[in-house]
Amino acid sequence: MTSIRKTLFISDLHLEESQPQLTHQFLSFLQSCDPSSVDALYILGDFFEAWIGDDHETPLHSTLIKALKSATEAGLTIYFMHGNRDFLVGQRFMQQTGCQLLAEETKIMLYHTPVLLLHGDTLCTKDQAYLKTRKKLRHPLIQKLFLWLPLSMRKKIAANMRATSKQYTQSASSETMDAVQTTVVQTMQKHAATHLIHGHTHKPGFHQFKFISNDIGLRLVLGAWHERGNVLIWHASGKKELIEFRNE
Ligand SMILES: [Mn+2]
Image (tube, rainbow, N blue to C red):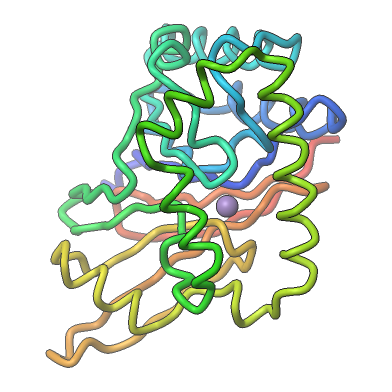
């Protein structure tokens, strides 16, 4: 008998107040995740377009927190990994939603396959300017200082940073913004993983390659959510499919 069990992966929803149809898309996707067949839902970063602290309460945030909470209470296991836009999502959010926070490089055994999970930004090693900024922003002390600022000030700083980042992203080449194969191989070998799942690049697809050992590696890239939702379904049988869907 074939198993109907499966594990789901999503990333780069970039949920924000000004895109209510995206939130709607996610909420109905979440509703469709049946805990009796879905072993876990992994959110691999950039779930939110921006996050300036768990104390920043907005209607969007409370809608999503409520929905995630009822999903986890209904028995769905949800893992949450930070992206480059929502790395400040903290413990309070995890407590409120029942989601479990994952470290930035997490290796799992998925139906007997060693799979490495990451957001994907650290694979873009051609983009040294970004990686330098990242290092500063991820410093615990910098984060503490930022979160200590009043919300109004955090909002201003975040808006400025988003504008700068937008300008930079538009000027940087598509190659600069993509995963570097040697980095992919090194990172996978470090974790002894044959498979890698990540998002961030917004270039969904499966990439197969050979390690020096001749072993086959597979990199599965998740798609961003725009008008359509995107999910990677990894079946217990080993079958993997990248699905685009749209609510009617
Ligand atoms: Mn990203």
